[in-house]
Length: 501
Image 1 (cartoon, rainbow, N blue to C red):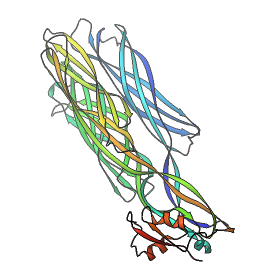
Image 2 (cartoon, helix red, strand yellow):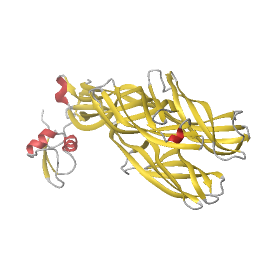
Image 3 (cartoon, rainbow, N blue to C red):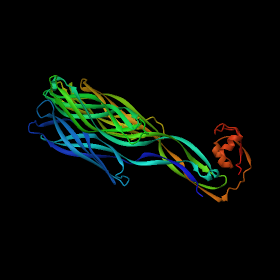
Image 4 (cartoon, rainbow, N blue to C red):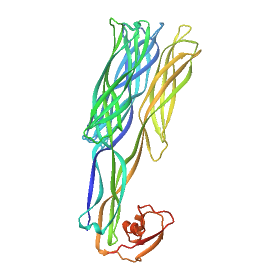
């Protein structure tokens, strides 16, 4: 006969299909008639805007727009000019694991961009975009918490307590951040030629079913004036409320923020020029919930043949989020004595995770003016490593990596560069809970009691193991030995009575 089990279920979202893909997008552009010929390409930067994200049966497609800015030194002239190129990009993921009911959470990031001179009036642009995708599927975690019915006396149940986390909600919300920043008077009549944003999440709170995400939008802007290219860096505080479909949520959440539109403009006013900022973005969140359950992890019968079936539950036993910061200092050599650093940019390249180490590639590009009046561009590729906490078995991942606080000054025949790399790291410890899912009793084959009615053993192991081995129960062993709990001192003498019927 089969016993009737009492089961509980926890509604949750499970990770389904996950993937990372890299694609190279190319495009060409020509120099407008009003601008001079290209003598040397000085610097190329890019950012990607998320345009759409759609899941169908067997496929997820993400589309974006790469906004590329190319700065060049004109042929036979000094100073810098800027060209803008827009490249569409598409990432398509095919898998039978994907359904239209799944919720895709994805990001797109430019990890490398370059421009090549085809002729003085034409350039070729190449941009590498890395797209990360995780599909969440609504599901449930079921576990046995005991027996019901009159057959409970035929079996012995071993219950275990476990604490773990599940994804309780997956949702997203679009938002807009707007602000204005004062610029120096030299910026009057200027034009924004490059903009880039990074997001820093600084605080996450919950109220009922709402997640409150607070942080800073870090903007880096290059704008052209009559005297050349100027830079501006600033931060905008933001706060967004994301409503979820679960009230059982914690502040532990994976937050993915991506720009969907960037509108930056230099405006002249009575009080001087200002930079008008309007940033459109999307906030994607996977919110965790914590649980503590008692489940049946083992069973046996002293009366008849007993066949027990088990069902594993994969859960996150522990999830730890942290932000690490590394400051990089270096001197980049140049061809001659440097009189001025026109601008310095740091672009985040590929991010790789190997075991307990996160490796980040940073591409540094400088535009300098030498003392002899010649402009030049210099680049250097650097690597920054971050270490996890070293606890095994765990999975280390980098949610977001950003570069901040770039500072560069002339230093003889070189440039002293300093910048910070911040990494939002997450370490998850995954475990498997083996819960009983079925108990089959065969009353036609009673157990043969070949054990003595009382056995004397030396302590060690657990009372459950002794009860199973000698045909007893945990309660009987605890009572006859006057034990307050199931802890068995090593080497102690215990009396183990056989269960009587």
